[in-house]
Length: 263
Image 1: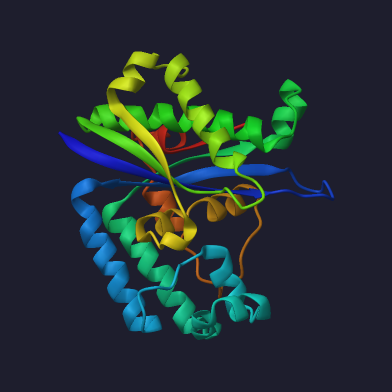
Image 2: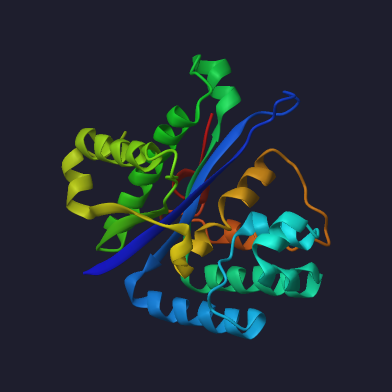
């Protein structure tokens, strides 16, 4: 039986001025167990070639800030000084995009928090948004696993800090709540037969596969709220879009099973 892992990350675009909707995104990549070593080695070799060390952690937002000569980021991550050259920054995005294209399926949700508040009177909170998003993701991931005669687990970057140990616990609690009660279409037993667990990885552990997931949510949200990037800025949105899981449907399968809008 095949084994897959869903690596997830999250981001939000919270607009205080209210001239655009507040949106929250949870998204990432599904990777076959058989491909993990090859992908990991590929990123290690790439880091050695570009940064001369495999110990650099790739973080999408920080990389873009380094490209804008953000002194804080460059002081915190000296290796990112290479990314002030647009050519080098483009190499990073091309490498991540190529890996997504060759090995990954994209799965996620975009939660329009402002629309949910307007349409359903749901409080604008990241907790509620996360629960709705995870419920949809776990349902579609379960379908993917059944379609591929497999089992699967979920890995996320740990969000706990020295001052706040509760963030990971909240996500874990939501996961097990969904596992106990089921989703919109799958019973709890269906989920329990296929989903083998959830775990959290510290950012500083330098998990290369989780770093790929870090590049997924932000481009999806920017496209949804129609905030364009400069044409000169590297973007992997089109590669992400093409690799959305479609559930075997030609028409709108990617919107139903791959990256789902919740509004």
